[in-house]
Length: 122
Image (cartoon, rainbow, N blue to C red; front, side, top):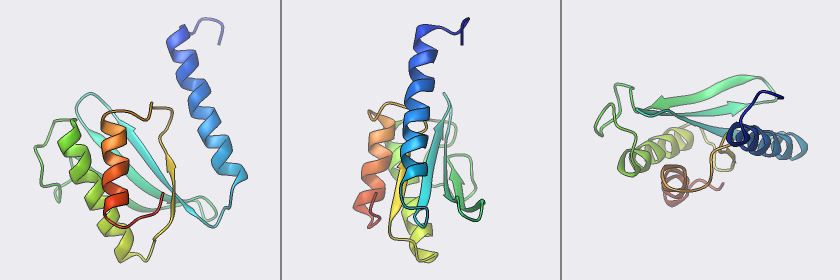
């Protein structure tokens, strides 16, 4: 990490802090992992005990009803609703929210709030 910028060091530190908290908690709860790029967002519900992905959706998927190719708050809310609906179908009601090192602000906050509004406990 010698040649890594200060901004990237902070990102890595946040990411590892979140991952370590999740690993020390109850392993029976599933993990909701979010990834965002400049053009799209991806969300997965992962079962770490069995190492399998239960649900995976993105703003690029065919079922997505928002504007494709955009990563904004409106699309984050729609994606959160899709994740919550698919989680309910699988019988999942409680999740750990793995924000993957991103600050809890803007699109990430809109996504998490949308998931909570649709009946999933984070």
